[in-house]
Each structure stands twice: as structure tokens, then as C-alpha cells.
Image 1 (cartoon, one colour):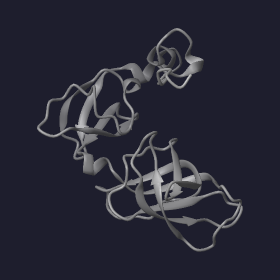
Image 2 (spheres, rainbow, N blue to C red; image 1 turned 60 degrees about the horizontal axis):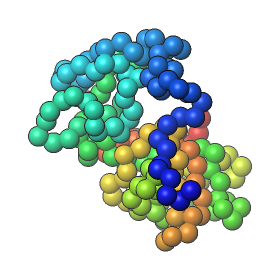
Image 3 (cartoon, rainbow, N blue to C red; image 1 turned 45 degrees about the vertical axis):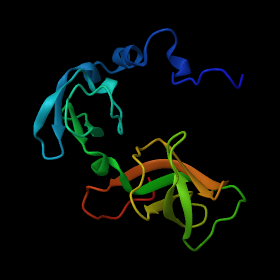
Image 4 (cartoon, one colour; image 1 turned 180 degrees about the vertical axis):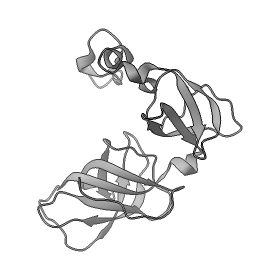
Length: 185
């Protein structure tokens, strides 16, 4: 099993593609629309929001001197918002369903490394846990954080030891003005 190729598919979709599965349930996300930068300048056209995810770099169909990343999917206006890598990187995260491996719930913030994507690079951060029993935390990156999106896991490490983690609920990006990150839903 160790030499089996890594799966990137969603098991409940069956024989069709993910896009086909979603299209049957949400035809609105299959309509083509504009690809815009953060200022709203039209850069191109997407073939349906269903084909894109936050943080995506490839398959946008736009040639630029520097790579573009998906910053957000504006479903209301059917727009794909893109920007530079630095604009896509997280400054802070709101995290829920947090659990600590040893069962503790430190009252004081603690420094650690946070990994977001499978095989992602650890990023130095400070974790501030919410009140005991809340299951929420705010992650503040010391420098540039990883490209992150709600729904992804955030795993807390001390060296090579996992100490805790949870599910990302909100992302404050490097290019956004400073604001507090909600740590609860």
C-alpha cells in the first residue's frame, strides 16, 4: 500500500467528475464569468466557479509575468478574484473544532509551527485559544503564512510533534487591511 499513488479524488462522487456532481446540484456555479484582480479589473474569463478553489495557481488561463492565485470566489457576481502569491498568503486564521493532543487547554498564547496543506511547509505562528470548552483559536503568523482557505485543517507542531489543530473558518490575507479575525462561528 505504501507505493500506491496518492488519491486526489472525492470518494462519494462516483464515476463522474467533481464538476459534474456539483453541476447537477448547483448549475449556477457552472456559468462562465469574469476573472478579476482585487481592484475589480477584468483579466479574463473563467469557465465556471466550480472549476476553481481558493489558493489555486494552475489552470486559470491567464498569462502573466508572475503567477496568479485564486483569492476568492465571488458567487454573488460570478467572479473569480485573483492576485499575487503575497496577496494570497494568510496573515491570520480563525480555527474551530480545535483539540489539543494532550487534552490541555493553555490559557496563555503559545508559539508553534502551523501546517495547512498536505505536505505544506511549517510556518511560525502564535496560537491564542478561546475560552476553555469553546474549541476555537486564532492563529497569528510571525511572517508570511501559507495560502489557506476555510475548511482546510490547521495542524499545530512543536518541532516534529503534533500538539493540536482544528478546521479553518476564516482567513485574513496579507494584502488585506489589518483587522481582527473571528475565532468563532
